Picture (tube, rainbow, N blue to C red):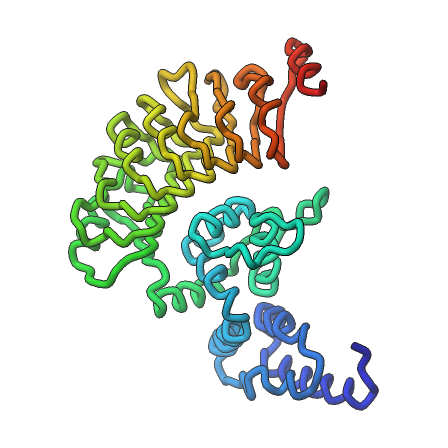
Length: 375
């Protein structure tokens, strides 16, 4: 709305005072600007914390960051707190983050606007956090491609998540640390993020009923190809999200994953799966399956026979690996990334009526397949 000269001068006076209180600290000024950008009257500007004045520069930043969280509408707070899962200075892919939110059940049908998908809603909510995170825009689509969170903002995010028992973050220095932690902790853990140090090559999962309330398990390894050294998934009956990027999965662990009947999101990107894949394909409630750059040892044909609710499938394989995928049962599939005429049957693709996002490769020696698809 247009501002009169008097109102503008009042706002400018308030703004200059608050900027001076930021002591010239860029992060504090940027975050404060994001908070104030939607405020239209002097009264609204004054309500944004009576004072952030402090003699300590670090304290000023902390006050402004806390203020940004306080000012965030309540419905956006869980989406922001979810960023605490990720390691410091990591690039978080927007598409993956949105799928995790969806699998957790953060998004409700009534949040969706006309002709919007749930993924559109998630993208809209991510954009609402742009004042608190650093975003990279995809120039061709205009959407957020990825985001990062400043280390001071991340510290505040972790603090708020801890206060609300939103997620437990464990930094593993030894492979048995997780067992020791879970045997000594009493509160219910609903979300667990495990960060492996460079010296830890494996993880031992706990085997007792104390973690039966777990809803999501995300593992982050600073060194690719960590390994699960035991396979106690039987107690994770309520688990909706499992992300094992870069891990080595042997036959027993693949079989155990099959028991996660409530699973909605399964991230196996860059995993080496040394076993029979079909047990995973029996997970009938999985909505997102990420197999990008995965290596499936000993596989020739993969049929996702029971994954009738699968909506998002990501496939791309490390050089030299070739498999045949059967997709004909995936009537709800909306995203298919990594379609390759040497791996998939074009006739299956033609039966997928709900696909809205397709990334496909048709090579010269498969010209007939391309003609079939176009027709």
